[in-house]
Image (cartoon, rainbow, N blue to C red; front, side, top):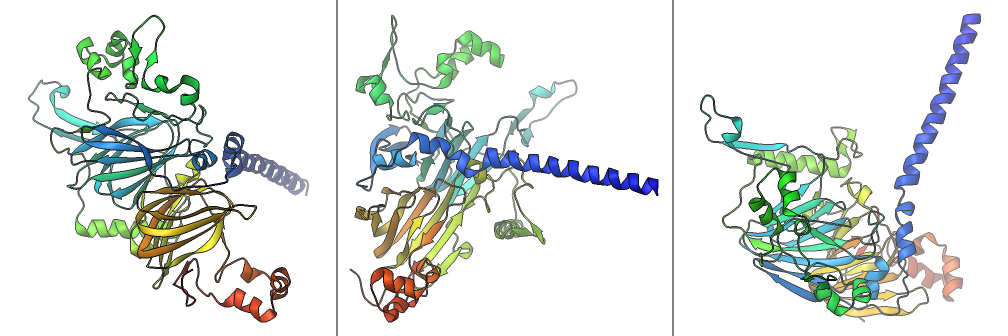
Length: 497
C-alpha cells in the first residue's frame, strides 16, 4: 500500500513537472515567432497617411552587359507605408545575375523565362558533387577536376522563390528568351535591423550605385552623395562589391591565394554591371530525372501542398533548414485554389504549402481574371498587399477608412500598386483579361469579402441590413443572396459601370 502511494506521488509530480515545462516551451514560440511581434518594427517605422495612391512604373533603369535592372520609386508613400521595395531584373540569354545578399527577406516572382537559381545557406554542406579526369597512382586527390556546391534549383515562369535576409543567391538564364524577375523586398521586416533602406551587398562585379536605395540616403547625403562619396583627404569612391574594401593581403591570407588572384576579387576595372554574360553555356551538377520520375515528383509536391503525404500531415518539421523548399509555382491551372469557369482562377502560396514563409512573414497569390470578370470587393485583414500586373489590364478602386477613394485607375502590365491593410479594394478585368501577382506582408494573409457566398453580408441578419441601409427586407435579401459565387465573379447582368 505504501509503495502504491509513493508511486502515485511520483507520477503526479512528474505530470506537474512535464506540464510546467510544456507551458514554458509554448510561451517561447508565441513570443518569438508570432506575427504580431514580427510586425512591431513595421508599425513603429511606417505611418500610412495615404490620401492618394497611384500605379507605379519603374523610375530608374540601369544597364548591364547582359540585361538591365529597374527600380520602382521606393520613396512613394504607398511603399513607405507598406515598408517594401520593388525591383525588376531582365536577364538576357546566358546572363548571370551576380551573387549578392540583402538586408531584407525577399520574394522573387519569375514573370518570364526559365533558368537556374542558387542560394548559399551558411553552415550547410555542399551536397552536390561531381568529378572528372583520371588519377594515376601516387597522384594527389586535388589533381582531379571536381565541383562541389549547394543545391541549384531550376526555375520557370510562374515560380515564386523565397529567400531569408543575409543569404547570398544568384540567377542564370538558360533559355532563349529573357528571364524577367520581379523582386519584392520587405524592408519593414523585423529581420532588417539597419534602417528602411534596402541594401544589396554584391560578392562580385562592380555594381557602383545601381542597387543602392535612395530612401533616406538622399536626405542624409544629398543628391551628389548618391553618385560618389568623398573620403576626407582621399580620392572619391564609388559603390563596388564587398571585397573592394578589404586589403589584398587580408584576402590573400583568408583564401590562401596569391595577391594577384586576391586583387581580381575586387573587380576594380570591371564595367559589366551586375548582370554579366557567361563565356559559354553554364552546366550545373544535379540529378537527371526520367519522365516517370518527374511525374512522381509532381504528384508528391501536390500531396505536400494539400497537407498530406501517405496519410501523414505535413507541418514543415520534415524540412531541415538546409533542405528547405524555396520555390513554388503559381501558374499551374491544375493546382488552382479557387476556380470559376466564367470568371477565372486564383492560386495562393503561404506558410502552409511553403513552410519557409512562416519565418519570412511572406505570402503571395496569382489571380487570373477573364474578360470583364471581377475580384470580390474585400479588405486585407492582416497584411499590406503589393500587386504587380503581369498581363492584360483592369480597373481598380481602393477606399480608405473615411470613405475616400484613394485609388481609381486603369492599371496595365508592368505596373505596381499597393492595397494597404484594411483598405477596401475591388478589381475588374478589362476586355483582354487581367492577371496580377500580389505579395503580402504576412505568411497567412487573409481577406474579408464584402460580396458573394462567403461575404460579411451573408453573416449579418436581414433586419440589420434593412435598418442599416434603410431598405426593405426584400432588398436586403437580394443584397445577401443575389451573388452566389465565391471570390471570383463572372460579369454581372446589370452591365459595367
